Image (cartoon, rainbow, N blue to C red; front, side, top):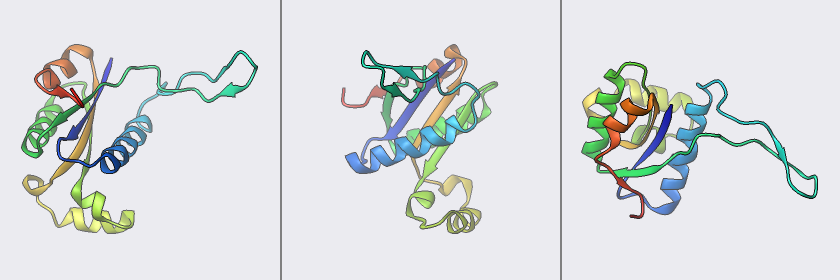
Length: 134
């Protein structure tokens, strides 16, 4: 299995960090085994378990994110979670749900996506995108 985070190229560091956290939590809540066992350091201090799967962070333009969302949503055995401008600008979840219900699919502006699925399918969907900061 593979997980890839894709953020919009024009995000400020604060917005990129926020999008990454929101998407990671949303995907993690859908996956069994998304957190490994807690581990102790050499001093015996226990540290909370982390996601055991590497998560590369890629970047894409707004239109590329929209296209990726459509292709990933249509791919077998692939989970895609999108964080969009409607959600980012909403103060509460009910406000988000109401605003989203009034937004056509083609008008959704993605801030970022997280894609999870079989390695070959996720790679095929994301291989042309650049690493963040590269």
